[in-house]
Image (cartoon, rainbow, N blue to C red; front, side):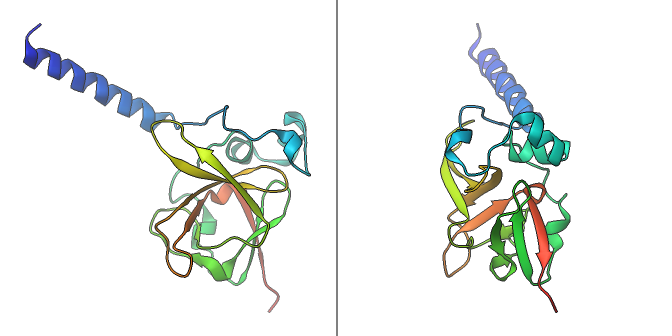
Length: 167
């Protein structure tokens, strides 16, 4: 085969693979924490009864919502963000910041609220963030955030609920 044709063929294969990645986000079954490790455990059927289909996809199947689709990204009031699965308080609005990513972002969780684990799937090295009480997938944490922590907890708004502080 002619070298130029081989390069074009390889580029086409790469482009097709990249398109599939963009259209079908990675949701690793292997990285899911064991349900037995959490205080709140439910069967998939029980979770489906209390979560919307999109919440279930994000929290239980480690999905990701599209950037810019969560109303919580625009939430500016004082209050507390909770895990949408078990209602554990996970982040304070005092640690929320505008990251420009299209997802609600925070620089610090509430004490003892989250757990993390390595997510090395789909050609990426990331740290997954989950609710420490029910194991619900919240998002990922990156080391490009603002002071004082330098961390950016990039979360799915679908995985959260918000309770404003009393006036």
